[in-house]
Length: 89
Image 1 (cartoon, one colour):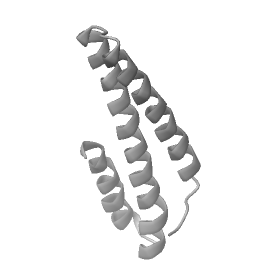
Image 2: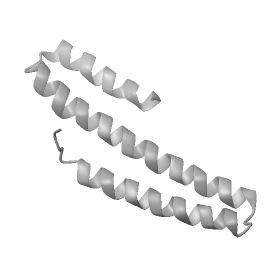
Image 3: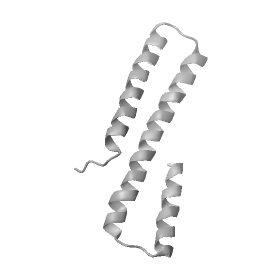
């Protein structure tokens, strides 16, 4: 398993989301309004999705590029397009 420069940041994001999730569970148990819960769950989803995006982009930028090796402008454009497509995952 390889560790990338972004991994510590991803761990921080996920731990923050984990703590936030615990808070939302407490909110549910306390009977907080559904609108408040939905808003907080949306924030947690976004935090996890952002962590996933950072992980995927880091993999593309480091692992794929290292495996592929030097690229000309056309080859680079294909990889850049793939990177842009990942936002739809």
